[in-house]
Amino acid sequence: MNDTLTGTSGLDVLLRGTGGPGLLLAHGAGGGIAGNFGLVLDDLARDHLIVGPHYPGAGATPVADGPLDLDDLADRLVASAVAAGRERFAVLGESLGSAVAVRAAARHPDRVTGLVLTVGFATADPVLRVASELMVALDRAGERRAMARFATVACLTDPLLAALPAAGIEAAVDAAQAGLPPGTAAHFDLVARVDVTADLPGLSVPVLAVTAGADRLVLPATQRALAAAVPGARHVELPGAAHVLGEADRTVWLGHVREFLADHGL
Image 1 (cartoon, helix red, strand yellow):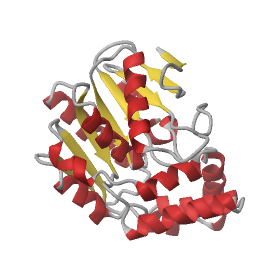
Image 2 (image 1 turned 45 degrees about the vertical axis):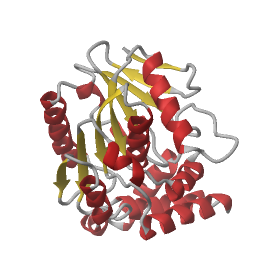
Image 3 (image 1 turned 30 degrees about the vertical axis):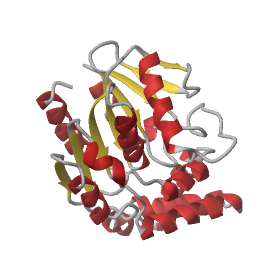
Image 4 (image 1 turned 135 degrees about the vertical axis):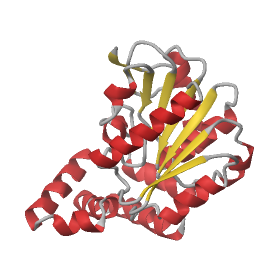
């Protein structure tokens, strides 16, 4: 299966795979399912049904009329998985999606069977909050190119940026600008308001937390603090990884995720 659906969630949902346990994907701010998980969709779909909802203003989901609400977003993602035929499922969250995943588990403990939290945060640290406020301000000013420039610098590592010639940086900015969904500002507005700290001690499902050690957007210390706050969480670190995992780091990530899913029968 390689299809999309819309249902009671009102979200544009990418479906991949035909059988096996469900994996619900929660993407990051200013991203989407293909942008965050595209490198591993085919692999994970070999033995899972992948359910990839797009937040309002991403994919083909319409832009929201007002500010996004974390509880509503978590509920709509869960509804997407149920509509796809999976009553219980693990959730793979990326960046903002990690907070969405945590809230989904807290609100729907009868449905969520495990969590993979990648480059995640419980609440925005000062650096992430300022970055989020900047993205919102640039969007209001109509400065989409500047948003893309900031995203490029924030989501790559120092060595990657240093290795790029001027033309390469501009090409990266071009790609970032083309990939910014209409709802980017609303996503980052939610990033600045998220706080799932109180949800973490009560999580009763297996959790894998993955830290990107060279992240410039969500500080590695913030990611480690999220992992430490979850009782019994398995924590792995990708030492040179950027906020947006490149192909090599995503391959390592996939190995850890597959081991985690197998260990817990997910």
